[in-house]
Image 1 (tube, rainbow, N blue to C red):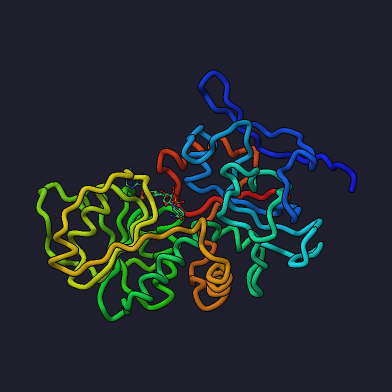
Image 2 (image 1 turned 90 degrees about the vertical axis):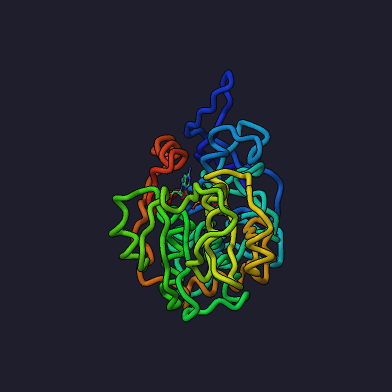
Length: 331
Ligand SMILES: NC(=O)c1ccc[n+]([C@@H]2O[C@H](COP(=O)([O-])OP(=O)(O)OC[C@H]3O[C@@H](n4cnc5c(N)ncnc54)[C@H](OP(=O)(O)O)[C@@H]3O)[C@@H](O)[C@H]2O)c1
């Protein structure tokens, strides 16, 4: 195959500052892998913004093309698992971290990374969910497997206007759960109610300042997407026998707690990782997202952008200003 040229958003370090621009690249410059994919859509996640702004915990080496999400069409495959023309989704693993990601028109990845697009879901739909929707689904499934049922009471969802939070709220609503949403954006109250939140709690009221080890029990369980003091408070306010899933760290990576929620209320803290999630579970969750778990409000609260506006959107997400999902059209 000729060494095609394509366009990618490339982040470079310049005297301690990181700047991304669209550049011409060649297929031969992509990392090795069995599957070459022409990317139709990507998205913007908090982790992409960290990669694009020089966070070495996410991306060690620059120049680099971020984009932890990609959905597109296989153009060339050296593997029996995929053939030219297959429509696939790639999220997690090393995509967009230290492997060139979905903010380029082409990616090349190992054949163990892509998931076949499930029936009933377009490539565009897949990137409306992206890693955020997949992580929301992982969190909801953990609650269900733990045994939390709709009649048990309200589920607290934190970072509720964010990608993971808004999709977790919407999926829980579709599955008949009652939810309370924690947000830093007072103006988003109506939007959160529309996604299915029965109650909206302002972030300042969801952070305990008394220092007590336990507070009045309120929630059957919690889906935490932010970490820090919000997660600490969730652990103090979940009812006896409940659980809290933890996937994020935008409010802080430290967790200061006591053993009391665990030994006096029997609460469990359940970790969520979308990056190394095993393939059989990935395929199953994408099937659920394409069908029975697809929220009534799917695709609302999604902005579609072109790669030209990535720099301002990176800034918005880093400053917690985004509501819902940002979809990037790469076609
Ligand atoms: N473990 C995994 O596999 C996995 C996968 C995906 C994402 N994540 C992590 O999950 C988190 C959420 O990801 P995302 O893509 O949903 O991000 P996002 O779209 O940027 O949403 C994050 C939301 O958190 C809230 N927030 C922002 N700054 C905050 C602060 N200082 N304190 C408390 N809340 C704050 C905001 O919502 P409100 O204004 O409504 O409060 C914001 O919209 C990130 O930390 C991300 O890295 C982890």
